Image (cartoon, rainbow, N blue to C red; front, side, top):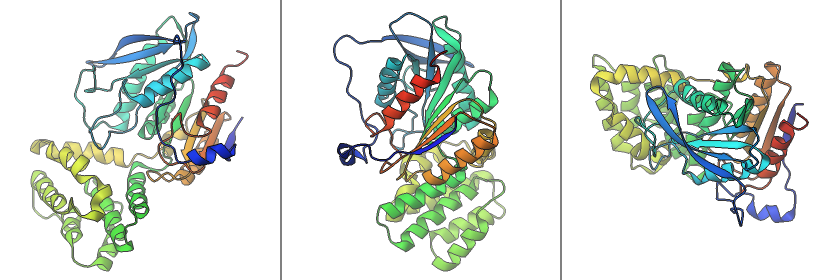
Length: 387
């Protein structure tokens, strides 16, 4: 059955916590009603370390693989098995009868490999390696293993479900985006700048640089007309030099273009309006790490990811889907995303999806978010009831 829900505030008490983000939920008291096992799974040449939380009954059970979002802007790393968010989910969902795997991505925690940029394609394959490990265990129902991803992880698990429909039994997305990666980036810069109280001109400057950064990484720019119009409105500024580099670089090598771009970005990194470009925390360290002879290869890979549109795979997802959105999300357009999820899943002929809009909530949705666990636990209870 398809359902699209907007959760009203259930009781007056919930009003005081409507803006709660990801926070630890109270741990069960007394003896833990679960078992935890340290596991290792293979992904290509890498060994990924994880923790599998299991019900204590001993009978084969369904399972969920937790899939992280993008890198943290303060650490440059994706979340791993020690994430409190993952721990909270594992230790709550196991009470609904599901085994839950949380694991360290490559280069994080106990996993081998190097952390760094990963395409959504590569992330989907990594996710499937984790799911296939869980499916191989005798204490798991192999045909009842699903994926749960938050933020960027929503794109990843939808791609995996479309690519491997016989293996992914269900997906749960939390604050996933229904728009393309490029559109989500631009939206988040503009929305966060407005929410921070920046002036109209500062918001225009931030959004312009956000679009220029996107076009700089694409073989075929998509925002040129809009950017040229905005620069004409703003007049001379650092955006003028950057726009020339993006659209009319002249006779320079890719390495020289990279260095010129880094110099421009360094010149604006401390501007108040550049706050949500995350230049110092994310962009500049990543750009500085690119070897001169790899500039074109990296640009091609990043550009492909920027143009990823979930329409391509949500229209192929036919397994059960539960999708949560926060009404006040500043990192992705939640209302548009929810509408697109409904449109694309309907187009796929999917009859088993539920879309939930949580009022007064932003991008961070966790166990302390009013109404979240109630819906999630009921959905899990119903997923295999009577089977």
